[in-house]
Amino acid sequence: MSWGSELWDQFDNLEKHTQWGIEYLEKYTKFVKERSEIETNYAKQIRNLSKKYQPKKNSREEEESKYTFCRAFLTTLNELNDYAGQHEVIAENLTAQIISELSRYLQEIKAERKSHFHDGRKAQQHIESSWKQLESCKRRFERDCKEADRAQQYFEKMDADINVTKADVEKARQQAQMRHQMAADSKGDYSAFLQKFNQEQNEHYFTVIPNIFQKLQDMEERRIERLGVCMKTFADVDRQVLPIVGKCLDGMTKAAESIEPKTDSKQVVESYKSGFEPPGDVEFEDYGQAMKRAVSETSLSKEGKEKPPGKSKGKLWPFIKNKNKLSLKLGSGPEDFSHLPPEQRRKKLQGKLDELNRDIQKEMDQRDALTKMKDVYVKNPQMGDPASVDPRLSEISQTIEKLQLEVQKFEGWLAEVEERMPSKSDTQRRSIYETQNNTAVSNNCAQDRESPDGSYTEEQNSETQVKANINPAPNPPTSTTPEFDDEFDDEETLPTIGTCKALYPFEGHNEGTIAVAEGELLYVIEEDKGDGWTRVRRNEDEEGYVPTSYVEVFLETNAKGAMTYI
Image (cartoon, rainbow, N blue to C red; front, side, top):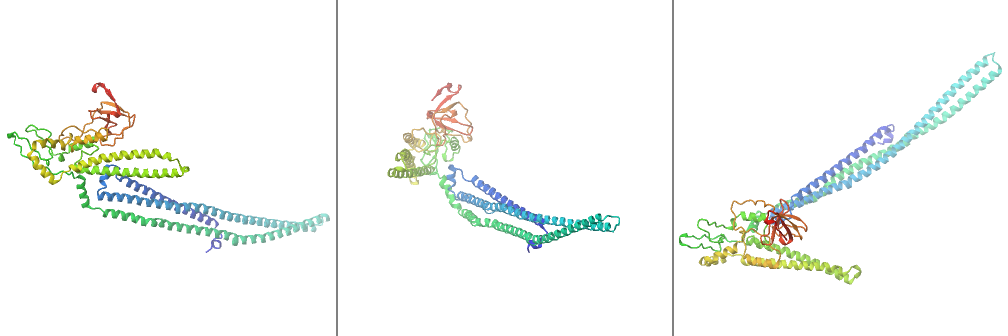
């Protein structure tokens, strides 16, 4: 059905209907826009969730990566991040394919509708104006006819009156003829305009208005069709990302299926295996016969000197918890990891060596690239100055030399560990020999197996000498307390005894140290005890050791006689 033929008299209703159609299109556009915002916010929340549970960049991350369930969870987080990306794609496609298109189309359809109704109103005004002119001609014709009748009656009355002069009668006759002529002219004008109006009216209702209404009908049908296309696109936008979403979910499922409990339980052994043999039998100590206690090398009890009867407190260091807790709290792990058991120390040293070798390879790759660039500059001077590359090459060479020295240092420590890691057969042979020479071996064992803070070391004096030759900076201090009470849990906060100012920047890579910037002011909580380190505090949570030669210390008046040293 055509609006032009069926709705020729519904101009106002069509105007309201088309306006409602445009408002409905705006309503749908707003709906899609809000859906896009929901997808964007959802993707943002999913990304934040994934980021929140990502492993932190610390040593714990390396430990977690060894377990299959941790790797599976990390894979799940990464897949979830990709899943959030697909929701961002949905939001982007909704905006680009629907919201932007509908916004542009709305502007076009509003302008088109305005143009069509402007033409319709203009046609309406024209036909109304013609109708008014027709009515004016009709009223003038009616008025002239009445005037002609009155003039004719007056002439007849004057002509019948014998008392009226002939001149008056002639005048009345002429007036009547003039009125009749005016009436005839008005009749002709009315007839002509009526014919014209009927022609214009016929053209208005059968040509002009139907054409305008047909254009409005086409516009409305295009609007409805466009709305249908957008609704289909609305569904297709989701359908397009389903394969990738499916892959993300498949990745999560595959990650979950990759979890191996047996492998993780074996990893616990690899992570915490000390490399020590279990302690041997404790020898009977007959104090009635002034005999010294024999200690086999397989026994890990700590015995620095002979203790009086009844006060012996032999401790097996693998079962001592408090000193490890103190070591972690102080952050006093030395660079050579001598505070760790042999097996764990070997793994740490090997990992450090692998890291240093990777750094060396990276620097060598950069050096090769810069060398090639320099060759290009030499062959093509217009591309650059070859001398501009030399400072960077020199810097890289120095870095490689430093890294190679570090590698040699850690290789030396690793060789010492591997040479001294006990095997079962060696331990049995040594135990037989040590039983016969218990007095001498007991003293050596106490020195070789434990450092002053109770942590395991192997020939600490020789390792300290190696570190002193390679790295002139002092090692972070460790506690010198020979043993700790089992009830020791927390370290009391040390009071401030003065302040210090950093003379040079210190990076503080080693455990127990603290990084400082040149010119930074810090609190002194423990002065140098002769080991080259001063303990400082930045705030309640940050404290550690810095080289004494790097700071200028100002002790308070009530601390050490208010002495000041650099």
